[in-house]
Amino acid sequence: MGRDDESGSAATELVIIMPAVMLLIMLVVQFALYYHGANVATAAAQDAVRAARVEAGSVGAGRNRADALLARSGSGTLEGAEVSVSRDGRRLHVEVTGEVASVIPGVHLHITRDADGPIEQFLPPEQR
Image (cartoon, rainbow, N blue to C red):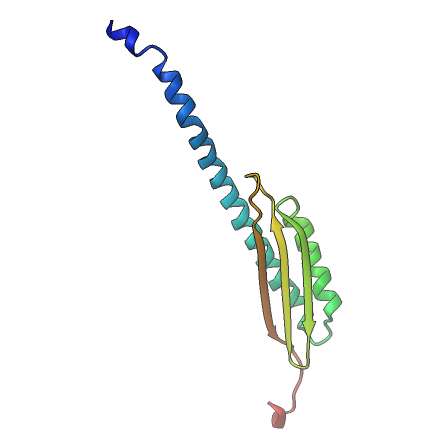
């Protein structure tokens, strides 16, 4: 009688626990993708600033450098990535945006990372 009362309880427990375990695993993977995508976007923005801030640099050089890094490191992780580079008299600003690849249906995580810095140029002592 004791053994028949618990017949099938392991299967029932497994049916109840397994979806929660799978969701937890998917959350961990989604967080890892977000973290990687954020690092790639930050690296692309910083690389673009380095390329465009030199005295002979340009907005196009910065955008090309960011696009190259995104193609090399962010493919499959950062979808629809866009790079915006603006350069005024003394400063340069780069913004990288994109969507993280989704593992969990209905979850759409957006990433925006930016970097900026001064443009390297020679200034006479009286303008410093």
